[in-house]
Length: 240
Image (cartoon, rainbow, N blue to C red):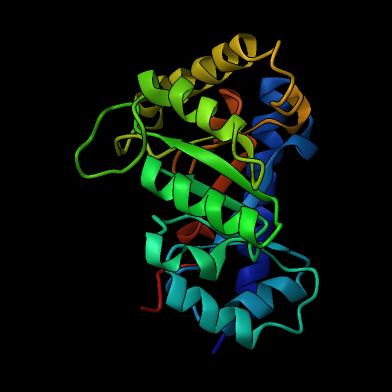
């Protein structure tokens, strides 16, 4: 049973936290998109949150997302974000069907995504996932390899690079995570300078940073995040 009153309360609380974080950072609240991480949650919970006015939802597993997308196909304003690693054999199932793919994380995946988008005459917005801490348990390119990915993306008309994403090392203390958010922002700023003459990167207002989750998104916003990914604080514990 989905309790809409609880969802409304949680949503209001998160919006208040976002507003306070933006005010403290001197940022416009409209610069930050709340992506409701709905993986492991039933489609009914997504529908309930949609009926409360929310539109951006994030999934990480293709099969789970497809089932929900089918069940919720009547929600015409729903915007799907794909957050997890996209296996090459599942690229065709996702490209062109999500508003934003947050996890372009390896060169083979990039090639397959570009080929699929080009063949279908699509333009898929993507974020480059960067593994700043070089954690073996997480995917993403190293910061030193980001220019190589950008060079390839410049030659991939089917993919529209919209910014960067990071999954930093976890820490209970949000301040301990701040340096990773700051590093992504600094890398982003450097790439924008380096590629300014190329003319194919989006302008600053359309260049995004996906970073920050339930326990640390205020710090992420202070460091420039434009997309925060919140699940448990919004929906409560996962159903599966």
